[in-house]
Length: 237
View 1 (spheres, helix red, strand yellow):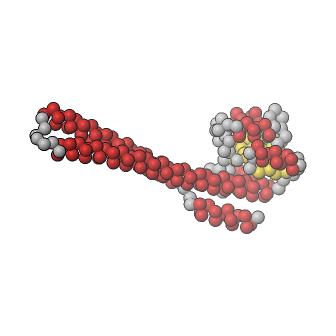
View 2 (spheres, one colour):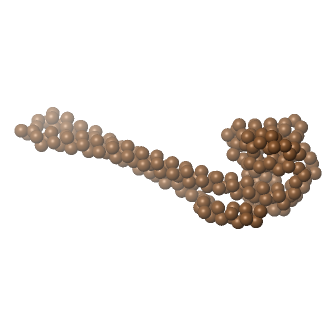
View 3 (cartoon, rainbow, N blue to C red):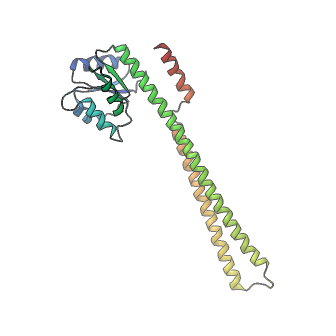
């Protein structure tokens, strides 16, 4: 398990908090704990976990209430949540999933099962992040294509206008006067300036897109690479 994975445990039972703190820390997780939902909200301002283990029934703020608060906040809505509950009713489970939790474990629980669920949720979330990264890059490619087509259309129009100006000069029956030459020269200079500006804008856009792609590729693992350990893990279930 990656040592950088951070877990926030929210439970009003000190025995559960101490148990998870001990066991998960030994497995390489960075663990923070809160006694209720309100305390968890305070901790989240400084500690952004990779996953939250959340008890349902607590004083001050229940697991349901905390989940609703987190899923309504753009800073926290993507943090996966595994909810613990003594309630084994299907309606309670469905209510949790509708709120946005990733998994639901009924008490009493087995730690091996909890650990397996944690691994699965983290791996699934990592795969989602990879897919999102690819989708972002595809979107950038599409926007780059549209920007290039717009720029090329502008280039073509500018070239046509310059060509028209040259044709005017060629069709003069006699040597054009200085005023006419100055006017045509000004038009051609303006068109040339526009072409240079469009080239510069396209070059800047390309450079920006390349930087964004490089940033997305940092620490990126291919989807097939991500799927392999997930398949192996599920076969061991």
